Length: 102
Image (cartoon, rainbow, N blue to C red; front, side):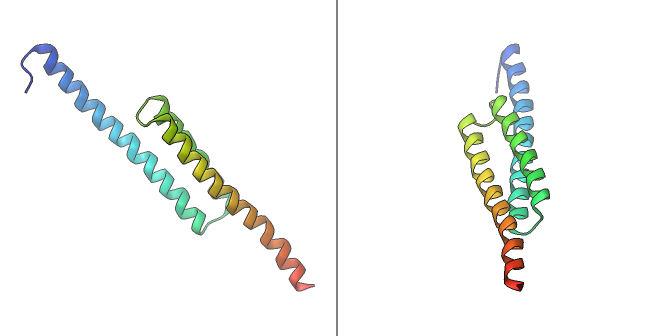
């Protein structure tokens, strides 16, 4: 346990910061999971909307150094790749379904 006044204050500050950082990380991870769930089954519009929110949360966490900026960039890249793949599949499926009926 801290003995000096400044050490006690620093402990209080670090506890507050830790709790805030945990809540930011948790919200970020929840948003990423939403994107992954929508990638499995969901509309492309919803997926892109949720991806934008996830990217925003990742950027904010990286800007405040809650997570490493490279981690944010990597996660955004992985999610963007997923969204792009899903968008291409959605665009290709109506045209192939139309040609199959002819």
